[in-house]
Image (cartoon, rainbow, N blue to C red):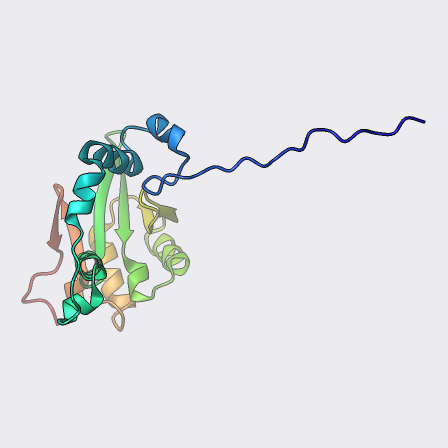
Length: 190
């Protein structure tokens, strides 16, 4: 019998990823032109490595900001971003939409922020207004209730009556001609 001769040894291929985009360097040109990674990569290519090095500074560590070193500006940037993401008070937004120039749909958004279960609320609205009501996700992925028919006024009254311990009159808004306004006047707010 013939003995098997060893074949050529195969070494695994090592790929280095670009630290800016997170993809192999040869794929950077193929990224979509409107994605953030491509824009950062293009900016770093245009600026060159010398401008990135010029932005770095060395602190002696005598001050509080110096003790943090280079991380201090990054921490300030993170803190600035988190302050923008703070949301205001939760609110219920009612909106009347028409489709096919005849049909009307009332949209109730924001009830879940008050701890109301949307499935139960949808069932309540459907029974109260004798129409179809369902929980629907919008384009942003947030859930809201769609009720068939024009029942905006009755829905606002029902929300205040049914969920008076959770939702105040001052938390209910209505969308009129793409402007959000309070539904109840300030003198009516209890």
